[in-house]
Amino acid sequence: MLRVTISEKGQIVIPVALRKRYGLSPGDKLAVEDKNCEIVLRPLPRHPLLNLRGKYKAAGNDSLTAELLCQRQAERALEKERS
Image (cartoon, rainbow, N blue to C red; front, side):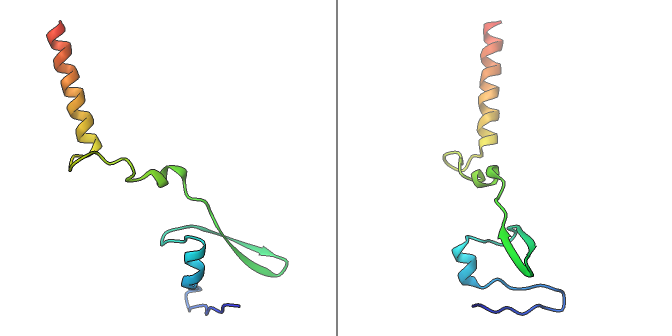
């Protein structure tokens, strides 16, 4: 059994072994439940879109936004040529 101490502010530190085991990172949310005279901490799932953050970076140093703006500009130029 692992032991933790409650600080004056009511905070506890989750031991590193448990953080690694459950993949907990700073900012993650936990549900706190009172079950049969026990305090239960349960990790809450992250928003699924947050897992995609940074996954689809553009090639080179350009951002996807800059790449999209360049494409839109090229499309506008083609439309002007056609009309």
